[in-house]
Length: 472
Image (cartoon, rainbow, N blue to C red; front, side, top):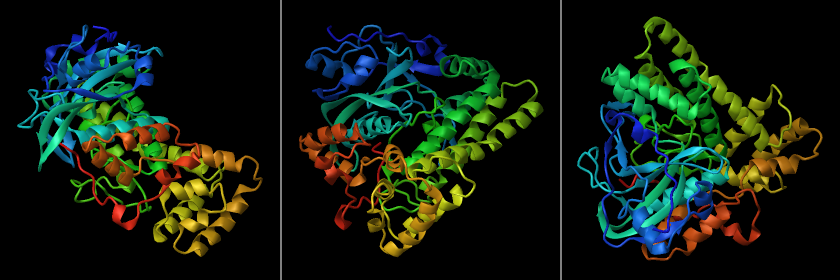
């Protein structure tokens, strides 16, 4: 085998209560459609022949050093606790230590049935695989902590949802796949020994400076607070912020019905399964706090003095909204080109966003256009922007460096929902031109790239994507 992956698998060395050994299920006719050379180099992977890599990243051939397994976890799904979930269509091949010294998981998503599939087929269809590939890599380029995509492979087999669709497998790379739900399942079972072992493992792997369960809780809080503020700053809507989709590493994970805002409105929802708007754009900070509270509840189960632990955990969780808001303010000050904080900044920012919501302004293009005289063109009533602009100009004072700050904080390109849908429709017909183009353009989201200006355009009326889907 010419493909070499330098595995060093720590999770597989834990007791089998945390996972089930599970090889990926072979597929009929694998075809490699994407491979991330830059990420492979970071992981110190030596690429092999194309056909060989298709076999490995489809799950037909287990590479040397891999110890494939499916992880066990539980989770709150839309607020309702499910006592056992687990990797129902994913197999963790193992871990590598990258050229930067960081340990990362390598996982095949859509690799077939596992003991946790609960009647599912364990497969993925091409659309969600390509969506996650493009969006996760775009998020990385935007500077947002995220899982990443190493490879995408067509399986040559149909996947049956409402209709027959082309199957695919995504190779996902993550700091780890430990979730809030990983802790919940052992706490709910009263398995204190496993809960303690999991806590120690998580601290050693992610937050070695943390001391004990409450130190871990604090570190996860801080990482998640920063992450959520970053989501908000680019108009990202995760769509399914269940506790089993909340990574303790502070990375964005599980790009199911995710989407980016076009026209700004705080209560925007895209996910077809979020019928009550629980995970709307503006609700994401509150849900992050709620998820942290579930982690706190799980961690307390291993503490000897439960009353003291509850008091300490409550204080940690209650501090999270203020931390998120602090990060949010810093990021949105940057989006307005403000160099220094001022007590009136919150009012200035929210005043703009209220006007954006009232005037159908595009989120990404409005903030980017603040560096030019064209921002008012984003508003159905440009006078609404003009009134705000006078306050903003007074607040800016010295204009030195304003444009550079705005352009550094506001991307020109995001993975527009309608472009993602167009890309998937084309790929189903074996046309990967838009997939390749999106990956190239979104790798440089803060560059103007006038030759690709069409990819920054909001959707026309007939291109609007009203709902996004999980693909499971």
